Length: 166
Image 1: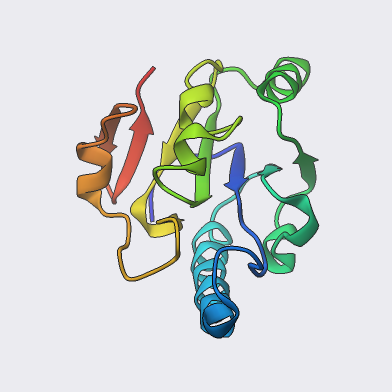
Image 2 (image 1 turned 135 degrees about the horizontal axis):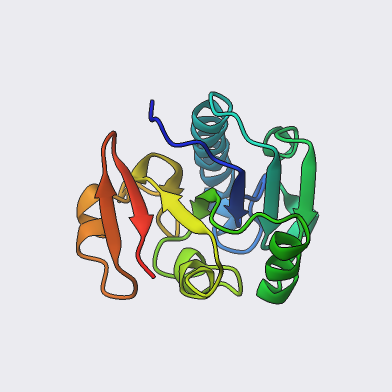
């Protein structure tokens, strides 16, 4: 898959189901799509070796499947807590993979989104394979979204991986 060793995975808004985005008429189909997306994330990250996971977003409805990953779990919505954890565990200059939704919203602008992550002394990576758009629809995030990102800059790595430039 890749030759990058990841210390941790950051899950942004990986809910098990949604209650507010979809109308009741579409809720069942939306939740099926979300479960499919979480299976895709799980299958991707389950092949990696890492010890830390950070979950951010709605904690009340996190994907149970994704909660089974890693031994050290941190549930936070504050970049200062993550920065303290990195310093305490001496994790500076380690590699972290970010996955979840939604590309232009939470992944970028969340309190622990790409913008805030540029302030930490860690290397942030992501891939279109494990991020999605706002509504988990057919408009998937692509390599072009990383290459043409107008909010943060990315460096392309082999095997469809991108590193967040600081």
